[in-house]
Amino acid sequence: MAIAATTGLMSGIDYGTLISQLVGLQRKPIEDLEYDRDQLDKLSSTYDTLDSLVKTLRDAGEAFNETADLNVFTSSSTDETILTASSGSTAGAGTYDLVVTSLAKSHKMIATGVATSTSTISSVTGTFVFNVGTGADQTVNVTATTTLEELRDAINALGSGATASILNDGDPSNPYRLTIKSDTTGTSSDITVVTNDTDLTISTLQGSANAAFTVDTLSISSESNTVTDVIDGVTLNLLSADAATTVNVTIARDAGSVRAKVQDILDAYNAVAEYIEENNRYNTDTKISEPLFGEAIARSIKDDIKAVMMSEVTGLDSTMNRLVHAGISVDIYGKFSLDSTTFDNALTTDFQNLRNLFVEDSTAYKGFGGLIQDIADEITSYSDGRIKEKQDGISSTIASIDYTTRNKELQLAAYESRIRGEFTALELLLAGMKQQSSYLSTLLG
View (spheres, rainbow, N blue to C red):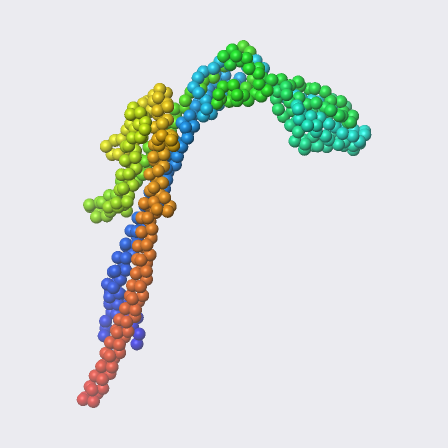
């Protein structure tokens, strides 16, 4: 007579409910373990997010690894139909007056026309040989079956520095003409036909030319319309010529870009501090604590990074060795902010010292960029970082809880099986007693 989730036939006892209650009492330690595991999972997830936030802070500090990271400039042109300008890290602030009198041009050659693009262009077997500038001779073999398209394709396959095309000039009889254009502007890249065994006559369509312009009345000649070697760190793109128009080019420090890099550090730090603060609270009404409440590791992370943010860079002038000197302040809640006016003024008037404040000099000092990277690396190191060690401890505790839970589940299953057997035995005992009672009653009756 097995006991299921029913009432005993002999005793009238609701064994299903009774067993459920007894097993429930014995399950309480397992439920406590499951609660602890759930809290550890939340704590682990919280540290995962914190690890990501600290790494973002590290990346923000890494933006100041090189001096060039702060040497950012903007370039403007008063007439971008004539020329545009762009600046690199080696540029310097300044203004320049430019006049473009002529643009650089490529040498172009053109052949006499044929009836179609597939017309043959040679009556004999021979070669078509040309060169570009001082380059080596380029040879195309031709036969009596070579077409205009085949000649074009053969020239282009050489990679000679010249490009062949076919154009239709509208001539009623022979409109299809081969053109060969130098890929490079300037007079040193002219095309020279050395041998021409085709039936085509080749002539110049456009002569080559160097660009001519002035910079602050200084005459300049350039074989390219992209000029990189006149103003240090500045690329000029010449677009059109107008000898009557003076174009003003201004190169200035890009305060916005540099300020944004600094703001990235402040935002990343604020995100770390706010995240730790939000997850380090205890609600006295609900009696519920956030995952990082009482967590010494999280507290130390916040405190140590803030200490770096509040520190001075050793080896720098006392007028520019703290973030506050660059217009960075911290409020009563520990949030850092940047005063753009103060920062932009320091960028303009004291760039050297401002750069030193953020950019590391391996021989003399370590700027805030390097200091931030160091503390972030120490916290997030995969081998021995604080967060890694904390996560390892959490994982070990979770594994121990899982092991204990499995054992207790097995014990609980055995307990339930045992009490079911005991209740079954009770029912059998009661059944036997009832049978004896009936027998005695019959005997005595």
